[in-house]
Image (cartoon, rainbow, N blue to C red; front, side, top):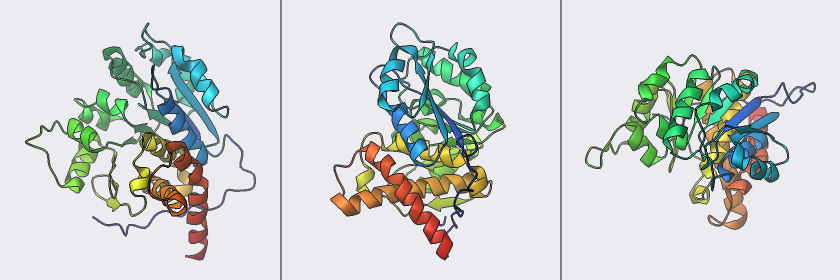
Length: 295
């Protein structure tokens, strides 16, 4: 394991950039009581530089989400009377899946059986890179190896408890060594594991990056949703990361933590909001770009 793995350079954008050329991110999430989660992921993606962000949520909360963030487009998806996403969401969103460069799947979706079915149906339909987070991870907890058949990269972003579920660990069989746990998830899924926590780890099963930014300031609800959006934006802009999804994920984790460091330097290590972490991302990116110029 190494925290010395070089992060990809992040060059300034070409002068002729436009919103469709710098990355299109689709966020699929939300449920009654958890409308904020996909919004925070969308905010993270926008602040990390995605040019176009669309948020797809159960129809019952579409108006709520629209009022949160005017910069995003919204899609209402089929849901049951309780606002849970239904498996027919796949056919309702197929056209949008084709236009997205990267998809975030899971923030705030909830764990209703019909929603689990919807997640699995969507994964079968998505031919783009996917950032799988939160309730998206819950839906695949018994089918992690099925992800290996996806043609595009899957980035899984579990915290400690979600990692245990993905590895089918019980309390007595948990593996305490975090790098081993992250590597097992990456190998089983055929993707990239971002194991969140102190010194977040990123691994593709061969290379492992230990992040050195961030700290207690990130210990706030919604911080992980923001991270998913930042990862998605960097995956959508893969040419800027040398076309390496692992490098893009490492850079996203570094920048997300650096945004937290900026907030901690100004106001201490507690009390910052997840939306404020997202809003500090452009400044963190600027520091990375400037460091690349002087390297």
